[in-house]
Image 1 (cartoon, rainbow, N blue to C red):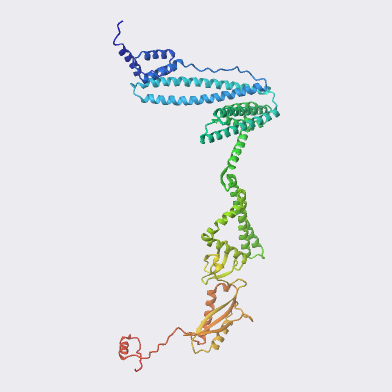
Image 2 (tube, rainbow, N blue to C red):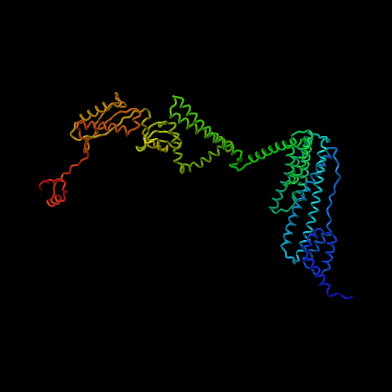
Length: 618
């Protein structure tokens, strides 16, 4: 037998040409039947070229040839005639829903892989040896995708058939409502116990693993898996029981069905965390509701139930602890209630102050000072009461606040001593009433004015120049304060003046008293204990000093500068009218000795307008 020496090169050329035109054959590879794959596999096997790409292509072709399409075994669907068949049909619907969820996940995953392969194929050069491999892989994925889609569509069709059967057969199924409710409670309790057991097993298993103990100890993976399967079974039994209750409510057209729908979907969420089965069950339940309630009633009932669900969810969010203080959970609802209580307290305090002012304005027995004290004290009491009620709503123990306050007392004593001092001073002023609203006070000889407001921290004085001065309350407690109108509006003014030496004091006193008494001012008091008087107070270096003592009543005492000016004018005019000299400061200089040279120097330095001074002879 003679071998053709060019045969290997011919095979290689055919394979190379196949790879060159691979991109055009992409769609044909996807849609090809097994014959194409078999022939291509024979070509590769007869090729002398062996590498990883060829080996991978052989594997892919073998899978394309030998992969058989999955068949869905369908049990015949028969209309249920009793409650057991009705329950089994519902469970079959759920089984199909779970399988469909799994298939949909695979479909999404494969679709993403196909998209990635197509991008990679487009990015490669037409002569690349990897194109055929990627195309074969793409063909395998595409056929698997189509197969899964066919299965998913078949399940969807069967689910629609089951939905129709369940809806139409409902009216012929007898139910036992009381027994069904008990069965639901039993299944739910069993599922809860199994879930708790599984969680405890997982915690124990993790604890043993952390300790390095690999022994079984009753919490092996097989044990946990068995418990999880039992939990799933109990959960599905609970869903089935709830569905039977739902069906009975639909049959009797009871709106309780909408609440049961919510319970079924809640349990379904525990069965499948992806919510895929919930979508299928929701579709089934809504279709049955429309059949028995009608579209409008179903929409109204669903809306009402959804509103209840929203309220329930909102309530759950509001009652969920945000943080914990001293072991007390603080929720959003507590914070909102506490905030509103404090706001209501603020509005209540403001309303109280307004009411007190209105009552005081209409009552002659309540003066301005009493009104202000009652308004301020009541306002702060209401605020403090609201504050403590808000703390009680939050669940904060007031004894813990007392402990904290005690711990902070040292810091408050050093850091906030002025503020605390002013607050305490304000309380003292309100209750002691040594200074009241409307009083005219003089503080430290520098500030004087009417008291217009007394607050917890400060007091407001309005001067005669209409200037409001905010004075810390501690200044009224720690310093000397002159209250000109504490008990009445009577004050004695002491007005000092002086006359030159050589005038008789008796004459000065007489003329000044007479002038004041005859001045005609109605606010001057002349009584047996309060009368005008002039006294001699001293003999100064330049004058004989006197003091005019005059008693004034009324509003004039609140303008001391004006009142002093009025009587000084009387004194000046009276002294001037009687020829009594008002002295000015003077000083005599007595020279005991001076030499001639100094005398001559003084004489020569005198200004022309200064009279010559005769100096004594030395």
